[in-house]
Image 1 (tube, helix red, strand yellow):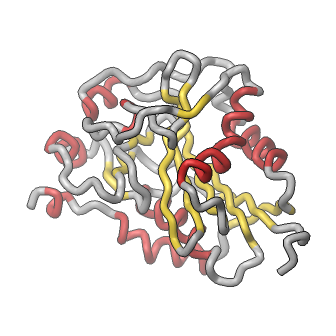
Image 2: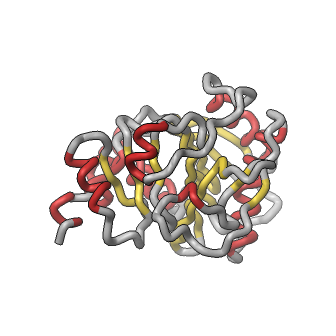
Length: 253
């Protein structure tokens, strides 16, 4: 294929799903890049149906407190295909980006996949920059440390925590945009106060529309289309969602 041809990108519109269905949808976005599709980049913004704690692919043993909270139905737990630490999905917004053949160096990939977020928040008078810490937080809380995968504000508060999953040279990057974390539940989960809420100049209503427009503008080299999930894709998502569901009985073995 000629490199001069304009590549196609899509915004995927989707309703709030359960945690396992959200992860299955993100994984499907990545898998679809291998199927001879014309799509080279897919982006999705979403909220979660219910309160979910997502854990990284390599987080095996969970704190007993998380298991108790799940049994009390204060939250549900799902495993991400990506790495990183635990994220409480409540009062925020999640984005996911599936990119065909991005830069293979991890740092460069994070920078290029996140630059549109930096510029979109800068336009809202909320400048962000990449974190500098090298290791994942030992507390298991994604928002207690900030690596090159994360974006922090001028005061050092982590505003967007992201993680990646690679498959066949293609990239899935998804992350949580922190807006209004629930104070009491955050303390119960992580035994610490949550980060400060996002400043008032970050719109709660209309943020998805704003970020969608900025994303399309930033990645202007692509020909953008908007797509709804098709029936066969929804069937695929719900069929594969069980792969990401956490059985509480398994965590206690």
